[in-house]
Length: 284
Length: 297
Image (cartoon, chains in turn cyan, brown):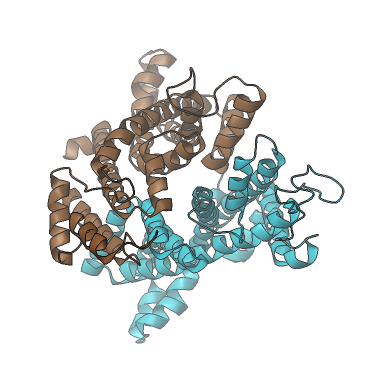
């Protein structure tokens, strides 16, 4: 490969060569498009009930069958995708903002500030955060915005460690010293000089955080502490499916497959992205 | 280190719960002011926030987590006493399953690198990581409990074999993580000089692996066990709910759904203490296993 290839085009080249990552990426794009287009492609509105029909196995009218209230499962999975993916992306965004700011500040200033900030991260690592998310949901009632915030507030720790490590590696390089000598303010130092150079690891870790966030959301919804009816996410669909799996196994199987495939796709894509952006893998 | 952290957790949880909207007794039918006053007195809610806090904290030190709001006449400590042994037993089985299957297949995969014995366990491990517990459990129930009718679908200690499915469900994801970690750790160690020396001494391959490679290669697994306890706890919420096991995990979820604030408060503090304790333990174990850090300290 030519030496002139930039990090990003080089990475893109390697990513497109990675079959698992490309399959994962394609599945994700299709899912996201389906989620956005749900109101137009769903055959039925998500709350539409056909009580006379009740729970029916997959058929021509309802390709994935219906639930006990006669609601079309395919439509509900499509609408559930909106909630599940939205939680995945927004909560990861929250984690990203907290983690990146925390890591940049700690890494750049170093010294006492760094050790205090990282000590806090160490302590928080040791705590049962899942229990705190549950506690917050119980105390303030479960609404979507709180869910974003609570999950985001849990998942930023690793991100801050990664960013801090990267910034420490960068901050004594000539371009940073030059910028400092020219009197660049701290904020534009972060934004213009440091952030663009650590986008790679951030992108990788963000992709790998999304499935964890989605797992956490569905875990809460499964226990009845997350998304509340009439809204549905994949977690609530699985919960409903479990309750009626003895007679109507399709209600568990299809949401389960959708959820698992999505998690696979995200993990494969994230792994591929890491391999593509990590220069160490060039050798092997 | 552990004690100030726990103190901070307990304090934070206490005041968070106090922030919860509404009093503990206004949910159901209205009670007369006199009854309310007596209730508040009985549960020590008329004292100032600070007094309630100090009372509660000194109670915890004595192992008294106060009364449960939803189960009159039962204390939170009693509930923990009933639920903990069951959850503990479940967790032990799950960890044992995870360790045995995980270490065995991980070490084997590392030794037989790039053969089917490597690919197949690692593919299964990927499934174990991607399929969440709350899906794995019901699927196992559907297959082994309902379709094949081999194992009971719920309960704990009432029917023969009813402990198998919950333990496997909880342990499976950890088996997957441990398999990946031990494979990675072993691969790193197997290329090092002291392994070559051991082989050059003429030791059998089994001896090399068991006595020399595994000791270093499994350090990542040991350090993983501490944080795994936190995950195991969350897993027990799900598994105990699915299999209707009367353990601490299900009490916690029920308390959360019923808004039994004192129960939530007590169990949260209790869980935190356990997790901090196990993290400490696994750090110490990993330190002790690693000869390099042993020499320094």
